[in-house]
Length: 540
Image 1 (tube, one colour):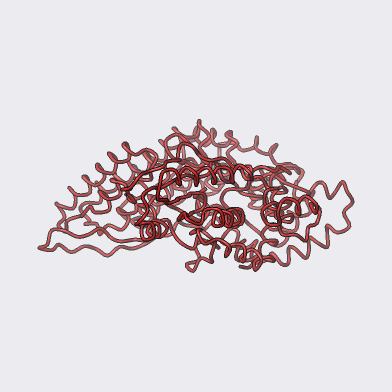
Image 2 (cartoon, one colour; image 1 turned 180 degrees about the vertical axis):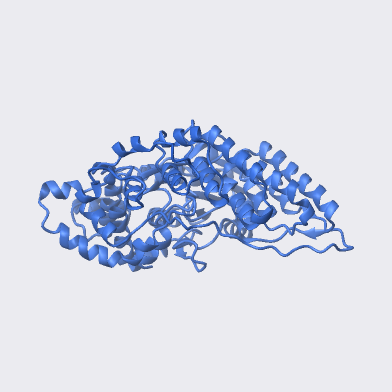
């Protein structure tokens, strides 16, 4: 795995709207590093301290029910240093992954180039492996780590890689992999020792280094237990309740030793028979859509109704995420579009995690969408989620304005510019440059946000891009005072691509048949979601 690959496809969290990318940064990283080393080598201590660490951009995404997950966009200076360490030591890291026989989530290169790295198996494959190998066991232990990425203690990395005594005796030796990773991670987060960024692919690497080395201890201690892990989800299979309790207590003590906590709400010991699929996934996965237009319309309505019922009954599961994937690939009759559009928009506002797919569906059917309906949903999303600080919902609503050329109301625009939601504010600046926000809406108050300090804190992305694009012009340009971002600007680096679009797709048009039924389309995405799994930057 190379540094360029990690930076190009694994820097920005996948949950962000399409314009956020790091291709130019990746393409020119060698030039940037050379220039930065030349500029920074003469720095005296005060100047070095100025660039010693940074804060990441904070971005809130929906999880389940009312819970949220915070994902992060690290500063490019320190993210590139972490990426370089991982790329340079990849052989050593990969050998750590090989120590685990129970992991299904060790990183491998993504052959589809959607990300730099993905888990070697998806959750469906993980589930199938458990089912195939644990058939003779009577008890199942299920547990996971509470707030895994957010609670990782960075000092635990050298403890695990080198053992505690060796790590503590050599804590300043940066030739040691664990120490180097520990330092790079702390520099990403203002020197903090707790938490790693959620979103970049480098964090999947860090998480697997930690868990694979703990897996090694599980394999040694629980030899008679069938153990399986996907990221931080553990499944253990035993022959007696007493063995199940012992196995759980060992996992709990192991996690505690490395400053991690069991998620008690998700911990359960079950006696066979235990199901590998939920009722909702079976019901929705076996649903059929008939091949005549009138029948299909009825089936669409029933499918969405069934999805909503199951979603209400299973609020902690990704029911509607699965449902929208099924609807995405439905061979739709033209006369059913109006109802279909209304229902997918209903799903979008009910379950905001579906908004990227809803946007893809609409963009792929651009000639027949109702802008009135789309505008109504956009305004509703902003109205509901902006006061709550829900960055994900607001940013995707604003990106829908870009995708479908929809003008935003003045009052809404003013509220966004006053929100301190820097990702959404950047998209709003783009809207204003396109005339989709009136020129009368003032952004002069944002000039005070653009300071030298802001390039190293959670405002770095907004500061750099709004100045680079010419959307804001401060009297004193902070980039002139920051040598690293000055290098980025001189090399034409951008992290916001104005001509970006969501990926579109085509689905074969249906032909009415005598036969009334057709099986739902099989998709990799649907298979993954129905199993409740994920991977990459979002299953933390």
